Image 1 (cartoon, rainbow, N blue to C red):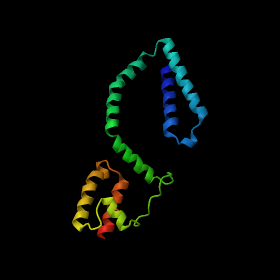
Image 2 (cartoon, rainbow, N blue to C red):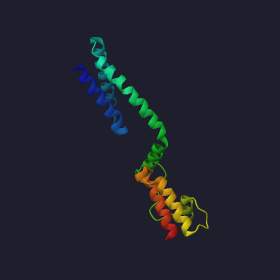
Image 3 (spheres, helix red, strand yellow):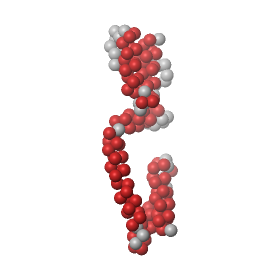
Image 4 (cartoon, rainbow, N blue to C red):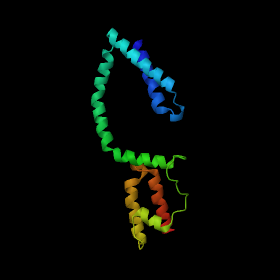
Length: 157
């Protein structure tokens, strides 16, 4: 019974901390959930029923190690996705995203990494090469893919 209370308090605490908007977080509810979790864990420890929780935590350690390694390995991808997400959210507080169709020729050349005298084939090759790296189906950013497509459209007409 106390284990169920501890698990419920933990779920409520996680929901309040990570799933709710920062403005809507209630300090009192978070404090009460934390106190309930600590109290339930203390009672479980005092009555000798905490062993299953320790075993579950020990069983998770190898998975956490592997997950941490993957997180470090894929951190650049996660960073790009986070930045793209922040740029696409309205009112996110970053630089304003330009309206569609407002990219200049110089900006398009810069996006594709080309010089001012780029040929049609160089534009196509640069677009193809960059899309292979940044396509959303391959873990790339939707925003970057849109920028690449817009740059190609501006340069090729």
